[in-house]
Length: 228
Image 1 (tube, rainbow, N blue to C red):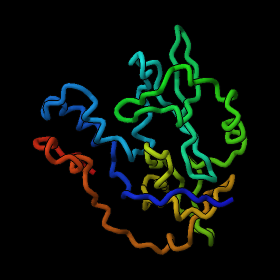
Image 2 (tube, helix red, strand yellow):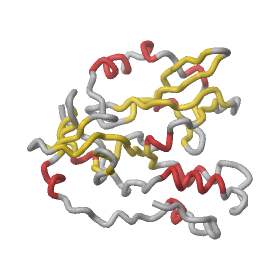
Image 3 (cartoon, one colour):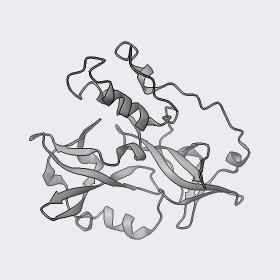
Image 4 (cartoon, rainbow, N blue to C red):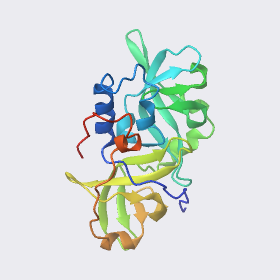
C-alpha cells in the first residue's frame, strides 16, 4: 500500500523543543503575559518529541484534564489520526484516545472541544483496525527500495492545521540521519518503511535552518536563540 500524503511546505524544525523551552524561559523578557502569543512559535509544524507531556484542556472549562503520551499515525494516508491522552485519577490513571478532528487549537496546550470527545481506543471504529494492522511508523525500520538500511524512525513532524505528516527523522545507533520527506515514502510494511533509492545517495546538506524565533523577529528581540 502506497503512502500519498501532502507535500511538506516547510523544512523540518531544528530541535523545536529547544525553541519552546527558550520561549517559556524568556516569557517575561518579551513582555508576554499569557501563553496565547507564544503559541505562534510552536503551532503549525511540530515534532512528536516536543508534544509528549503537552497538557490537554477543555475549551469551555479551560482546565487541564490530561497529557499527551502517544500518537496514532495512518500508514496509508500519512495523516495523524489522533493522540493517546493519559487521564489521572486517584491512585490510578487511564489512557483515552483523542481524535485529531476534535482538536480546536494547538500550541503550548492542546485545546479540545470537550473532554467528552475522549474515549477508550476500542470505541472508535477507525482506530481499532489501525492498531490491529501492525504497520507502525514511529520506531519502525527505514530502508530503501534496494534494501539499504537508514536506521529507525525515532521522530516525525506534522502540520497541526491539516494533521498531515511532513517529515520522518531516522536515527541509527546514536546518530541522527537526514530528515526524510513523506513524499519519498514508497510503502509502509509491517517490518519496515520503504523509501526511494535516491535517498541512499543523497549527500549531507547544510541543515542550518531558521530558528522559530525568526518567524516573529519583532517580539523575539532580546530573546536568546536556541542552539541546534
